[in-house]
Amino acid sequence: MATINLKNDWTQISDEILQRMKSLIEAYPTSFSKWANIALVSKPSYEVNIVGKEAVARCREMYQQVYKPNIRLLLNSDNDIDNTSLNSQYPNDKTLIYVCYQNVCLAPFASNQELITFFFK
Image (cartoon, rainbow, N blue to C red; front, side):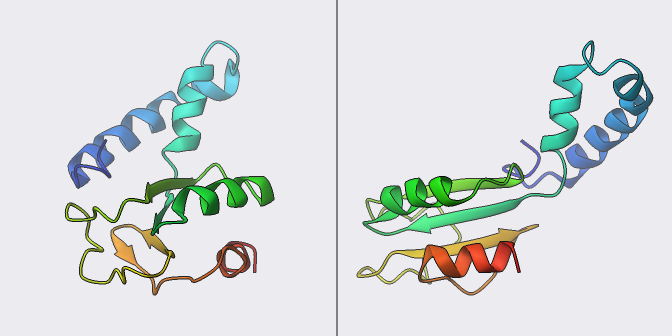
């Protein structure tokens, strides 16, 4: 929620809580499995925005080829990107993949293979 709402103070609070829970999670992993899952998800993650008519197909293809738990996928296949930060960069005739990390986006990737190379270089 902190990332979606751009609330850095929320991130700091959640990090502090998880830090306090760390010893309990390590000592009793089965009892604190939900907290362990939150700790895994709370690590810095990449946001992958796939925009264009082939967004859904590209997403399926990517998941068949590779899975990384710290990647969040956002899809937009109907060219309605008015509410995203990518609206000024989106060409209507192509499906592009944007990788964002901590609110900064890289230049778009044209293929899934380029994206996989980026994550596993």
